[in-house]
Amino acid sequence: MKPLKIIFFGTPEFAKSCLEAIHHSSHEVVGVVTVADKASGRGQKMNQSAVKVFAVENNLTLFQPEKLRNPEFLEKIANLDADVFVVVAFRMMPKILFEKPRLGTFNLHASLLPDYRGAAPINYAIINGEKKTGATTFFINEKIDEGNILLQDELEIYPDENAGALHDRLMAMGAQLIVKTLDGLAANTIQEKPQPNVEHPKNAFKIFKEDTKINWNGNSETVHNFVRGMSPYPCAFTNLKIGEDEKSLKIYRGKIEIDAHENTPGTLEIDKHRFKIFTEDGFYLPEEVQLEGKKRMSVKDFLNGFQHFDHISMA
Image 1: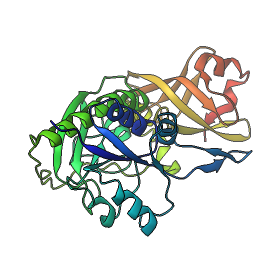
Image 2: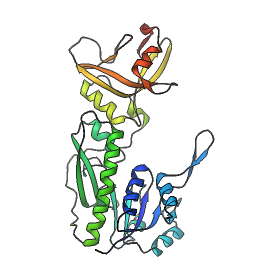
Image 3: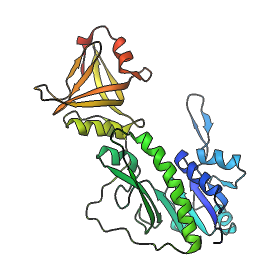
Image 4: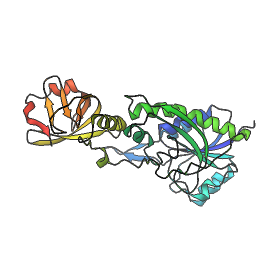
């Protein structure tokens, strides 16, 4: 098997793990493309992507183009004469770029395509109560996450696992799948295949702030899956009324109990030790929370901070 020359495109920690796996494989990373540094925070400190940090530490040729169609950038990429481009957690790539390498450009997606195309596949797999998920490598085309499949691996979702924990396990599995895909392309042993034609594939659209509010009218399991699927980021929240003030409360972790009751879903029952929020068929017991303006804490510490529980209600 002749090693392949690769240009890697990616940004966050998930992508960095994949780049590291390729770098330590038999294949050669001849270039790395990531986002430009961005100023953020009160001090407007310039932040570098996880992929850039790894590339710099390992003396890899790095590109941070503002525009992927920039002629100078395209010429530099072409001069590297890569066999294949690998894309992980990067922005939309124009056809003029993804068609350059002789073997094509493939992407790693954290789902079993065609289900959960989109920006948040890990979150939605948990929110929807899936028992398994996985990762897929596929050739990029002009449609989002719809190219021909190369390889797939499945992964069980644990009953109380949150999106952060599943992210980390998929990150490790995905890195291995990318190297396996590169080995297969180098040996010409992979038969690409079109994605199955599913009439109503499950989607994983980008999550916005308004999408993270908890709907207490659902059953307990639905609420529990929603909180797990949003934790630790972007994090599910609800609104509390404390005295005359209304504040948001992020919920990172909790458990459920199924118990018939006559309470309205979303109402509270609080004492010095327990914090119940009623659902359709039982109640949710938050275990780790963050009140607006406060730090993340256990529910025990949260309850210790209030003296007048009768002033707390759902807003």
